[in-house]
Length: 226
Image (cartoon, rainbow, N blue to C red; front, side, top):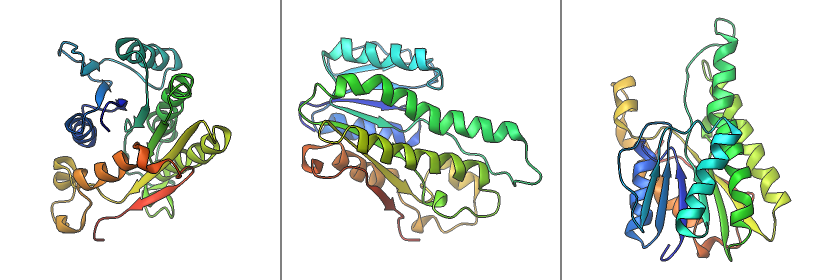
């Protein structure tokens, strides 16, 4: 990642923070975009752009363009921004389906559309999305979330085909990620079986690196020890 310019969306969350810091530790300059506010001043190596609703195309474009202007170029976009809801289909609210679509599909779509013109100018443009193993076969209560993540899978494949030879587009499909929030929600689970943010970040940064030049359109399960 040495010398790369990387945009990470959802960068203030549990996974986003790890990915951003790991990229920086390997020599990348990083733009951190998130819906939460930021009070951190920009440096030549890092910029934080907070208060961004990536489900709004105009806000997504403004944030990505600001990152490109700050660093002079973009090499990789890592779409981590998203959300989760557990709700059964029959008893649920249609608003949950709309919210999951906005948080998971539209954020990745809008950030990607904004970044692609910049990434196409890189010698190694990369997009890495976050799908979900749970979207391969949805279980009880997983309908809205799984449907939205399945949309991320299809978005990944479509963009990979459309931009082949210019920008690689791949997705990682985690199982349950070992975060404080997930441990609080599932206190009786065996946390040792979950994939850690660091394990997932390793795969994400591989796909964002020069070493992954021959990989595009891939949906890569990262299931921990489940």
